[in-house]
Image (spheres, rainbow, N blue to C red):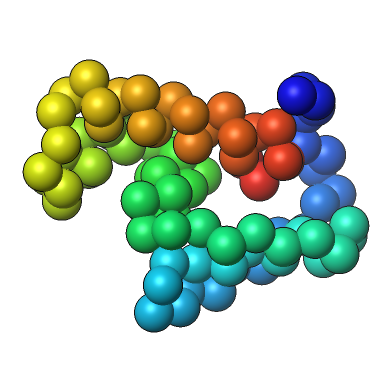
Length: 86
């Protein structure tokens, strides 16, 4: 997988839907559909929260183990960073 840093000039638009959230990278003309869990992670981390904050939020909303929540959050954050959403 390609690793790259998000460019400061990237313009991202986020729109909530009944099925999660859609993120549009206006500069590259790409979009991603985020499920509710990924949307929650983006909201927390992009607002300056930590991975641990995101894990705690997942645990408070979903019936999953700490290990599963942590693995899921790390996977989401990695994918979002690779795609320059975070």
